[in-house]
Length: 191
Image (cartoon, rainbow, N blue to C red; front, side):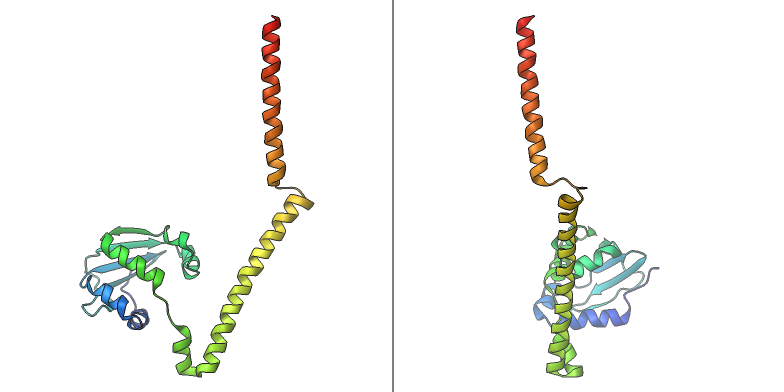
């Protein structure tokens, strides 16, 4: 499925860009250039305007930059995992690629500000705080579960060797190797 960037997505992207004039200023240098994002089977393409905003790219527009990323990478990018950014494939205009990469890392949407226009400041603050707390709880729960599983598998039902046991085993193997070498030398001297 290949289509130009849908208008609602263009509007949302421009909304975030307008909230950061520096971002629009950085994009102005790339006016007229077109970038296509391939996320799984979906292709989203946009052209940078002289204002620094973006518009849906024409189907016939030459793609100056092609960005390919797996749909499975999206949650990691949303969580701002630095390693995820290195897994994005970019081909074409590397100057534009660097700019888009910089903006992806540093440009954020002020959800609370936009939500406050709909439900008011206090409700927006509480909703956003609650959502952040929920995400933090999820991360902490996953970390605790993985730590508990690791402890269980190394201590209670050893499927995984602990670092101490591995180091001890390696030390014993090294001592055995040295002892065999000494014995080999003794046998060689006797014969």
